[in-house]
Length: 336
Image 1 (cartoon, rainbow, N blue to C red):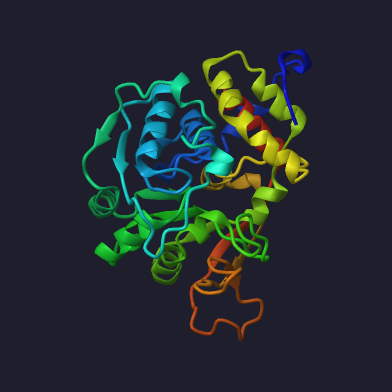
Image 2 (tube, rainbow, N blue to C red; image 1 turned 120 degrees about the vertical axis):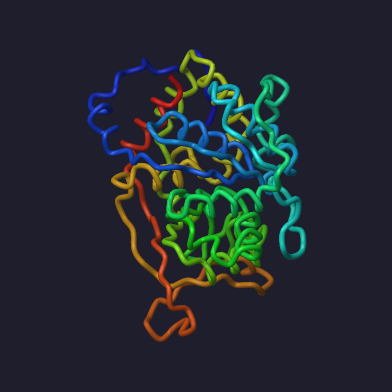
């Protein structure tokens, strides 16, 4: 799939975006990210909606943690929100290192576009991300929604430091895992959970607040149509040009997997948190993370019948499918 100015479709106004915008929840977000291409889109989307992004915490994943921090600062500068504090977190997973996702995101994490976009004068705080997560939640119990866009290492460390960490959160939204055995980096596992299975296990087995998981299958089922992607690439705005610059690196992948549309990945976790009406299919399930297996380490498994996973008592919400039209409207509007 390629795009150029010559095949740009005409930009059309959205008919009922004003009415649909009232469905957006006003939350206090903490975004934890391994800022790659879809993470950047997710942060941009959150900043375009009438909600409060209170902090961004960074973790190694798609690229190294220092590049992640720089990419977050770039996005905040682009969106004129450099006042939002950014915290550097874990460099390595709890278990053995797995590796980056440079094959998809590029060595800089944003498709080789880093030199084109400055980091600005953002607030890079010296407090470790896990410590800041603990302190923010403790200072205002029940206030914050934590959105996890990468490996969940920072959250797992925070939970190990303070057992009441998740109890002090309002809720958690996770982009990660796969509930039907469909992997994207191994035959049986999704990248975020495969990059740190132990952290995913700690979080899901010990969390005491509501958790919503957006699994890999939902990403595959909830892509935006290619004509919408073309429209976004043709937005003659700073954000539109940034979108085109960072996503062009991923088009080879979409061609290879014969994707029916452009997969927006992490943006779905933001949508699930802020626009719950956009989730058209969901279910509750008891789940666990596979810690072994040549092909299945990091896989999210669920109790398909009541007698399975007998030691797992708590359920999570699984967001399985999204309203493509509403998702498209939100993403096009974000580039204005």
